[in-house]
Image (cartoon, rainbow, N blue to C red; front, side, top):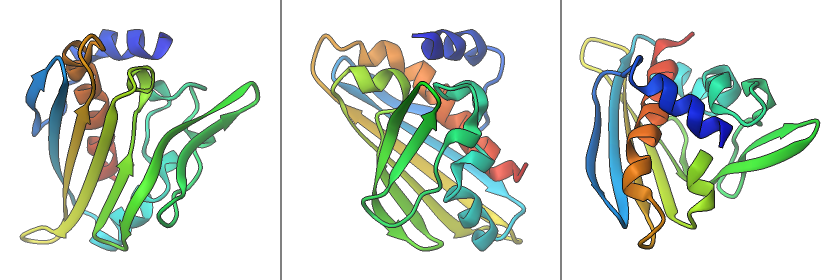
Length: 169
């Protein structure tokens, strides 16, 4: 719950560019984020596969992104381990080295809804150099799970993540 409150507090202050809640209903939502990095696709891919280097501390259960494990092949986990607990944020479904990562990813409050959450991140060379990052997050669940209300907060977190990945910092 702490995570959701932090997300809600900051989502009005920091709105990432090129973000969109494409659709939202009681049964789910679709998010889309785009960003361009000056880094090469290989450099962005290396960062993508190591979330501890770009995911925000504020968007973790432990308040420390360094507790997130590097990603690997299909079947590996976006996992956070800390002294008093652990959580699987997502399971890797598809890896196309340097091109695409797909996860089953019920991040944060979505974990409690029982929704199916698919997050796809694609990297393509950008015109003029660098990397175009395209992210889509589709969430589908049952009525009464509050998905429509969660869409803006999840949109903020995913958009902030993609912006951080693109920044290279």
